[in-house]
Amino acid sequence: MILKLSESNFKHAIARAFIQCRTKTLALFEGIDEATFYRQAHPDFSPVGWHLGHIAYTESLWLLERSAGLPCMFPQYRKLFAADGLPKRDRVKLPKLQEIRYYLDTVREKVLDYLEVANLETQEPLCHFLIQHESQHSEIITFLLEICKLEDREIGRTKGGENSPLHPNPAVSRPEGVYTPSPHHLEEMIQIPAGEFEMGNNSANALDNERPAHLVYLDTYQIDRYPVTCGQYRTFMTAGGYENSQWWSAAGWKWLQTEKVTQPLYWHDDPVWDNHPVCGVSWYEAEAYARFVGKRLPTEAEWEKAASWDAKVNRRRIYPWGDEEPTSKHCNYDTNIGKTTAVDTYPSGQSAYGLYDTLGNVWEWTATWFDRYEGFQYYPYIGYSQVYFDHQHRVLKGGSWATRPWALRCSFRNWYHPGVRQILAGFRCAL
Image (cartoon, rainbow, N blue to C red; front, side, top):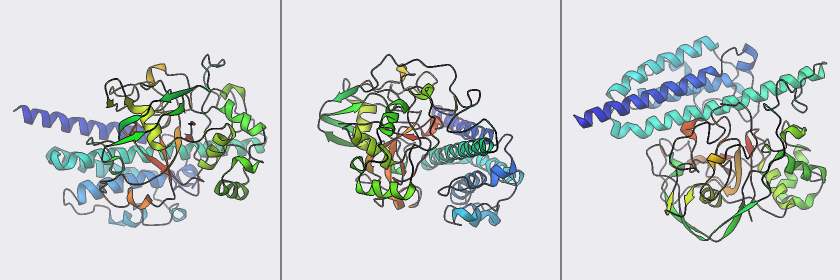
């Protein structure tokens, strides 16, 4: 009886997470115009409308077809919404939002019915995967919608409007309130003593690339207490950082000559943002800044130890502050604020070593190539992680202001090509 009650409660919790996640996803499309829905705002990403359909496709494929053994209800969408179906540039020819909503709702109704009879022992990891899969695509949608807004403001500025992503309208783009200079020393570094720590995650909600948890020994190192801020990065820019090859790796300098950029993507050149984390930088830009200040980017292991390890009790924390689920007192996440915040805003979110902002606000580049941990086993398919173990993608850690709570933890791993300038990505330095 207790086991049945426990199983019922757990199924209710999983169903509630599915529903909450979907509610947040659909909220992003409230009032969206047709042009934005179909637009490919970034060459490396599909239109926001495609991501919505892909969420339904993935849920149907794994829970209804492969787990429940049901026939595909919408075979006409297989090629369009499969991750390997069409090139991204060809995904702009989409059904209308109402049709994709019908697709989502129909699949979801069947999924909730299936969860009532599903075997938890075998389906729990898959349910967690699908909730996080939707969370990740929801964050991509948020990122793409931000690009659309910023581009539209720039078009408005060039046509005589006042809004511009480079010079934000205070009523639209600036953070609430006016921040005074931080009382903390933003350049402060924390020394992390030598020793072993547990890296990775074996929990039921851990994704395949987080597994298995394993011990890693690190020598003593130092890492920034805070992410690098806009004010700090401006020093690099005004010192000619984008014109001086000595700060750049050979690959970074080659990238810079091709891209011909002189500042982060959609840079806000206004002192009101000085204590906010710099974002919109590629891995190459982050690496160049680190060299400029005599530092380097942390490895993924260094980042994760500083964010998650509690040396006093000799164990890993799920979150920097402990195992309590994130709330608005801990960090900037889940689009609760809808923009970055000053790096010292959340003292309650500090790690055991005293690092701020390791979860939420901006993703942080690390020096590590995305690769498998020893003992890795792909789940639920090779294409989720394994195909990216190609020595072409760098690991990012920590989540952003748009990261959903289901994808927010110290062990979570994100990855991008080092040349990608993602407006949700920043960094901190190490020594």
